Image (cartoon, rainbow, N blue to C red):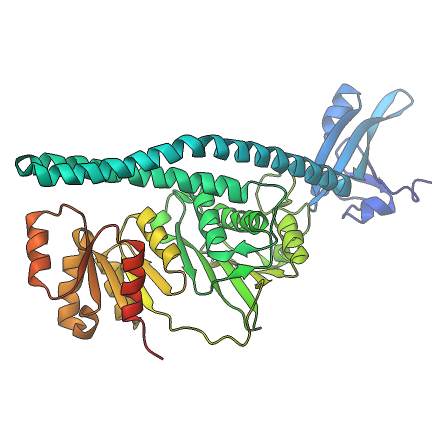
Length: 464
């Protein structure tokens, strides 16, 4: 009867050495003569010392979840050991956890939608009045030249106000788009989903790594946008956990999207420079109860749920990893409406040199039909160009490092120097104005109006 029971049954002596196992216990690595601690961390000593039964609803053995009961083994009134019964409850716990997460997502989605609606109404008023204020200040500056300097400072402050309002508007848009548990569309804007995931996961990256995004393909992907966002946030968070805090400048998490070898598909990769995963653990990585975290807190549903979401969209997800070198998570998904016969328009290769993340993201969003690379300093830009990267247009913040970049390009890459277009603040310092006046290159006030930005990039795009 004991051999037929599906629960794992162990008996141990007073030293904690196994004296009996049934086949279910053997299946998880138990054997007579083996120390119990090498198989399962059961509180046999406490059960023997207190002569009481001790139950635990959850313990982990080989990445499976067991409910365990440890009782003293008594013979002729004396405690001679202990009996441990362990029942595998992994599937039941996973089902409960999925149901709990579903209800949590549903409640969070409803709350997020309500908050976004309530915020948007006053936000729209602020946006309208901010624009009116900017126009009025500009007219006043023209009317009262003696106070132009002070009014210019007020305009600068007003522009900061507009940028802050735009940030709030983007956050509320994210809440509406990505916090719903019942997506209304089975299509995802690939660029928007990646950008949202990178922003949402950024708190986990702060002192661990730099996030780098490169999107080489655009178009709707055949998966609900909130679900794609959920998958990407999980992958980015896992990449962050694989990197020890304290060396963000030496580590990176790269999120890229590119066309797949199969036409009509897109590949999204999340690559980290973390500790990597050993081969014997990698083969279990998508099991519902498996986790690479050192402490077993909760159930490792992240990657298992990611695989379910991706598979439901007729896609695939796989991991490659090397210990000490990092991990790459690769998601392949079909485009929603691939036009396999379409002839692609010329794409410009644009380099943006700017340290303002908000501005850079807006440029990437508006130039989604082109290939956009971003650098935060002249040194990084020169390194890219020195490696052989070529660009049709370079948008450089003149105050950050535009002058340094331009002068270096004139010496080493004069042809590339002609492709630099400067971006300057509305009220630049006199040395900056003198520099812009002395150079033949074009320049624009920041931010560049959308129509002018598109026309500018189009004018630099290579002709077919």
